[in-house]
Length: 455
Image 1: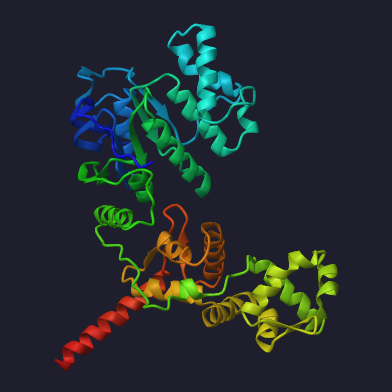
Image 2: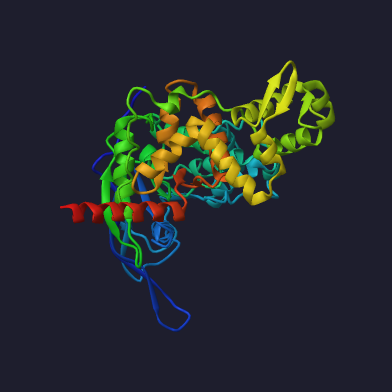
């Protein structure tokens, strides 16, 4: 079911003229926030997006009443906030669970602080645990839970006190990509569920895609000191699909506002797109592949697969992805049940570490269209940046999302080993190595000068 924002005109949080500075070690003043004006309305989700040092978390703590402004005011439903804000609850990046308490006891903490009677406290805590899908783990301790389960406990503890506003400080950044995605979807469902006591949220994040996925409005903060520089409205129905054009456009807009440069979409490649047409990459680790080739070389360059599997203590089926990788890179060939090293494969097996990297890069570019195309798109982008979802979108056109994810993981691992590109796992961006990017700029300038001379 598609839903849109349920925001009203009622202001829940109002910040006016907020300044914050701290004393610096030299006795001076370090400004962190300056002239912040912010209104959060009932029923909306607002994201604070900015680089490290922009004061996002500091602003959140002022709204929670944990810090006092150096100047300016914070109001909750028209009342000044001069201490802990009674209408808010905090969700932290580090889960902030008490390791000596069970799941139920952790969830009850906020209720206990509110003076709720033990029986009612227990009932509400159990309902909260059930709400976040942890029924059956009431008596488990945090050390028994995965990271995603621990953050679900954090959700339950925050929501069970029925806050007016949920304040979240990078709540998904400590989780793996798939777990974080699942919890974002579940959190959105909890906040937009009819009858939910908590429908308003303020999210601090460094992830542009996370902000676009969750928020009704995105406020982008500058740095030194932190100021709200841009507001972007997210008028997309929920649930949001990052592969839609509207999602991509907002992501690019936010990126440009945040960095001052446009993150160009990768150019199209006509009707034949190597990202879609390439044969699937085997899921093979480079180090294991290297070991396979070394073993093959030590046996004279040819061995039957059962003997090789036995020598390496592999099942033949488990060995096959490595064999497929060796064939893909033209390092080996299967002939009459034997795996035979090629001249190229022998050269790789006998080379030193740095030479191997160069040889691997050449083999990848010659034999793996997916990686070669990713490298081409990076060079063509102008910015030397390529967002991961631009690649997965095109891969998904010819295979499942799970298979596309595995393909991309292998391509990224191989491309990084070959030093064809770098990868920022936090922002899920592929990057052209600095020296290659600089060379591309020099080539572009040289071409421009040449064109000028011709004119």
